[in-house]
Each structure stands twice: as C-alpha cells, then as structure tokens.
Length: 362
Image (cartoon, rainbow, N blue to C red; front, top):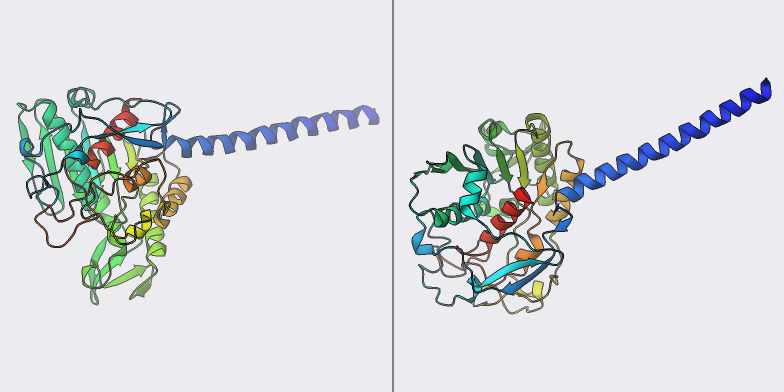
C-alpha cells in the first residue's frame, strides 16, 4: 500500500507540475498577445513598412475643408511644392484598406469619437474631419469650437468627432504657489466618459521649459517640485492615465487607442544631415528605419500600456512619422518661426487616421 501511495503522489505531483507550466505559458502568451494586439491588426504589422509614391493622394483639398486651422494649412500660406502630398504608407506584410469616409460614417452611425490630448491630437482630429467631409461634402455638419472641447457632428449620421484639449492628460490646478501639474489627478476624465472610441495622446508639452511650459510646479502626492526629470514626470502622469482607463473604461462599450509619439525634425543630425531641419525638405527618407531610433518617450508608453489591465491599441506612428521630415508646416503657417513639430493638412495625419480606420475594421 505504501508503494502504491507513493506512485499516486508522484503522479499527482507530475500532473500538477505540467498544469502549472501550461498555466504560466498561457499567461505569458496572453500578455504577449495583448501587447502585440496594440500594434497589429489581423496578424499584419501596420506600422512596419515604407513610403511609396502614390498619385491618387491627397484624399482632400485644404481649400475644400472648413475645419483646418491656419497653423496646419500649408497650401494657404504659400507652400507651392506638392510632392509631399503624393505618398502613401505601404506595410511590409499586407495592404491596408483605403480610407472610405462614407463607410466610416455607416459603421459608426450614432457613435461618439473623442481625441484627447495636445495640438498633435488637434492635428489628427482636423484631419479625420476633413477626410470624412471629403466623402460626403454635401452632408450637414455642426461645428463647435471652445477652449477645451470642440466637436464636428455629421448630422445625418449622428456621428460626432470630439477634440478635448489637455496636453498632459493629468490635471493642471491652481494652488497658492501658482499653476501646478498634478501627476496623480485626472478630474478632467469625467468629460471622456460615454465615448465609443477614445484616441489619447501626450508628450509634446512635457519637454517644454521656461516660459513655454504650462505649469509653475509639479505635484507628486504630497511633494511639490519646482522641476523634475521630464521622462520621469511623463511616466508618472501616464501611469495615472493608465489607472484611469483601467478603472473607468468598459472595453465592450469603448475602444481605446493611444496615438503614439509624434516626432519633431528640428535637428538634422537625427537623420545624418546635421546642418538641416525640416525647412526646405521636400521628400521623405527612404527605407523603413530612422537613424536616430525611437525617442525615449516611446519606451515609457510601451511600459505603461503593457502594465494595464484594459486593452489599449497603440497606433505606433513613430517610425513612419520620423521618415516624413518633409511633411511639417515649416514656415508655411500663420505662426512665427519654423514649425517642425506639427504637420501640414492634407498630410501625414491623414495616414494616422487611415491606420486608425484599418485597426477598426481589419
């Protein structure tokens, strides 16, 4: 009897060991799948590829879209070359569907879509509004513009595109010392609830210093700082945002995207031309890699997204945007100086929205 018991015990131990190994493997596979799911659609990596000449672009004319701000309207402010408008993004492993504004409206009839973030979110919101408008130019629209919340509604379809302006995602509050960036607070998140699609973005304003930064102090819990390493602050703020998504989003109701990091082209050394900036650039970089590599903020985004419980799809626009040194307003806008941060419309943000469309339907 003692021998049989030992055999049974050993058999049980072996079964349990195999079960634990399979469970651990399943957990690892599940986590890997969730992370990859943020970057891929139907097994196709939408974000690894190259730019190809495509004379069927752009998808709209800036003069025919009533939603473009002057800061993005390069043609209006004198940009005469138009080759930068004649490229499409081609992934290495598949073809992406051409954007169809009428189909977008039919699929999302009666739905609410919100972009949340800084002026790069504004860039993308205006782009999508123009792309849809070009498909149904006679459709009645209602346009509302306010300080923090703007919207375009395609009335016949009941589709509303919102833009909520909040550069840091976390709150800036007024305290005795002045304007305080609170890394642990998202009171503004109440305005984001009830949406069917949310597209978040942040980073551009975290690196601003001096008079151009939007705050006087940073609060982290009970501690108040005059300054902080910007990547550290961004990580803390984005972690607070991730916690907000985990606590407030129902994935069966709301699809959540993160726009990814939009690059700048002020320093030509990043693409091995140290004397240049975006000014005067007329064609993209060839190939599918960028000499300077991904910015450090990208690693912060990946780390935060991988730690979240709720699914967030990463629109991994970094590399494809880095290749487009030719697509900035430069001096062709209503602003002063050279803008190598934002993007002309029509232009690169149209591709971001085409990839959003592909991620939604593929």
